[in-house]
Length: 164
Length: 162
Image 1 (spheres, chains in turn yellow, orange):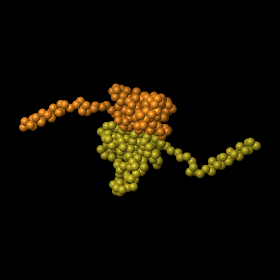
Image 2 (tube, chains in turn cyan, yellow; image 1 turned 30 degrees about the horizontal axis):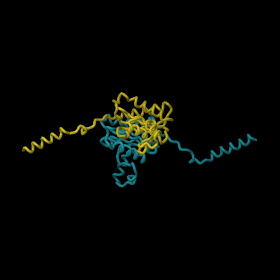
Image 3 (spheres, chains in turn orange, brown; image 1 turned 90 degrees about the horizontal axis):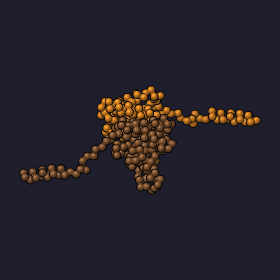
Image 4 (cartoon, chains in turn blue, purple; image 1 turned 45 degrees about the vertical axis):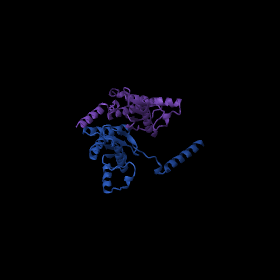
């Protein structure tokens, strides 16, 4: 009797599990470790330094949260904030922040411009795992956003094997 | 002409009479490399002990030099590590001191300032008697364990702190 009841309730439980809608499953995410994030930030800083540029760096995670923020005392005063905002912009738009800079050039009242933390400046790249944006890295301090972006790119290249 | 000479003389006299405290203040501050090494060493030390922690390294004026959000840490650890470091920098002493002070006097004046937290886990970064910054750690089960990792971070760069 007990066996029968247990069998039935188990059967019901299995049916219920099968009947759960697919959208009710938990989401599986891959996120940056602090070690990877720190490697990205420091590689970017050191790459720029080797080229003669002192820069600050921010690496943000999936929700735009700071994973690693590094103020370079040798870099300009505004670089800490700017590197964060560039990264935020890249994360939010899932694209290099230079793309948003182009958008704003074409449309100075682009609506995103009225949100916090967007900046129309090159120097940040999204951090991708396949098509999934898991964060962004932003660099500021080099004389030109293209140079900032090159250091960000060097950093992402360095950890490419980890981004999957 | 004589007046001019007299005026020039006075100007020079004024320069010579500049009080000593009008000179620039010489400071030594952490480089980005030193600050990152402190934070990273602290995070890794705690990790090797089985604790995921977040870390902040602040500079002389309490400005953030490095902020690190540890793997799988609670969201409060990021803020708390900052505040522990702030407390240590503000008081030029381990944040444990403030925790003890507040235990003895829950209405201690400093508790009403921004960013002060009565919790162990923050240490000042000293060059001799000069507090050039602080490191704060949060996430280990106990402020003493946080502080031990902070100490490991500072010990690692001891040779640079002079």
